[in-house]
Amino acid sequence: MDTLIQQSINALSLGGIYALLSLGLAVVFSIVRLINFAHGEIMTVAGYAIWFALAVSAPVPAAILSGLIIAALAAVAMERTAFRAMRGADVTTLLITSFAVSEIIKVLFQNGISARPVPVILPGWLTATVDLGVARVGMISIISIVAVTASLLALGFFLRRATLGLAMRAAAEDFAVVRLMGVRANHVVALAFAISGLLAGVAAVLWVAQRGSVDPLMGATPVLKAFIATVLGGLGSLPGAVLGGFVVGIVEVFLQAFLPEAAQPFREAISLSLIIALLVWRPNGLLPAPVTARS
Amino acid sequence: MLDVAGLRVRYGPVEAVRGLDLFVAPGEIVALLGPNGAGKSSTLNAVAGLVPAAAGRVTLDGADVTGLSAEALARRGVGLVPEGRRVFSGLTVAENLALGGAAHAAPAERRARARALEARFPILAERRDQRAGLLSGGEQQMLAIARALMARPRLLLMDEPSLGLAPQMVERVFDLIAELRDEGITILLVEQNVPMSLEIADRALVLANGRAALAGSADELAASDAVRDAYLAV
Image 1 (tube, each protein chain N blue to C red):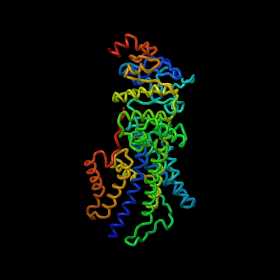
Image 2: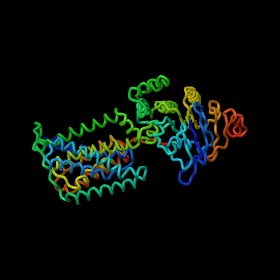
Image 3: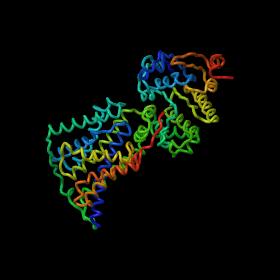
Image 4: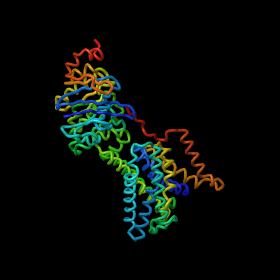
């Protein structure tokens, strides 16, 4: 019983990180139709920012804050330097541009710092375990769940209440008409990237806290999972991305925990088969984005 | 108010507008008439900054605005009620209105304008919290017009506002356009409904193949044989 509770908390914690990443992908995709393969590198940049801040003995909250800010700035800079020139280009062109951005950033870290992981020294209380009575769970899992919930609520509030949030939801439907309202297209796009970067920053903080190290390829695996999650949820659908993220995380943790030893090597294959089965059942994803007719 | 000279609009190899001249004086309704594909919508979209002009000049109140972005033109007082209404179907009626004023007024002023428009279009007050996609075609058209009015435009471009509406609603839309003119909004109207357009318009142009084939006062055009034969079959 306590293993089940323990693993459920781990599953929610990992699923939450995937949800933040896939939500970031979906926010950008819904507005500029870009599948940003360099999203993982935003995480990497944030990871190194945290590592650097702690290495120069900044306090933990300052290190976290710098990770978040650098992540948002990195995403906006990416849009400004690489994607803005490509606006309106074909989806494939945009995708390949994002591959290039991703490779460039990886190589910069590999050659500029090191191809090997560098350890991030974390305070003891972060890595401690907590006794919940029914089960012992990692402090970081609980922090993850709280941070993910807070991020999702904050974004939901922003999209419903703020004028720019409204503009973002409207732009996902019909960007041209949003411009006719006098709302500056560049602001909406920059904001979408900033939000996706911020979400990747939160994911990076939690990811680094769980692993205790950063490396140039650290963003690749979680973002690949997040891609799967966005497709599973329905490409371009924000609620779908969140649900997809949780499903992917939960499937991963539960297979790891409860699959017999002999079947463990096939874990990824089994989890992807499950996801394919879900997509066969719902080809447009679990919560597809509404189809808007454009004349 | 609006002066268009030698406008050309191209989509790849296809030239939709081929050297169009047109002006709209303050406070008048000018109707752009003509068959499908004559270049009416392309002209409106070019004036609104949604498609680039391949050649020609667009002047607004004496200032050259050729090539300005849609958002910049909106901030200079140009509003467009697009063809097919294009309300934000996933947003509520209130949110659609709020967005219409987003770049033009502070939140308090925006709410005041929304209240005033809801008084004018009671159906929008009734449906305030419903998704715009659930409204009927006529209600969506009212919303699209109200959304454009939130910006207090000086020049309102209207693309086929009566398209696909029930006859009663068509009447309502044309009455409304005439009212807006009387309130001082200058209107450039693209329409398929020639008889009703000529009834409310001050002047009209008939476009064919991207050029003005006929132009004159609405009364002259309504009386002209060419227009009568083509559009006002009696």
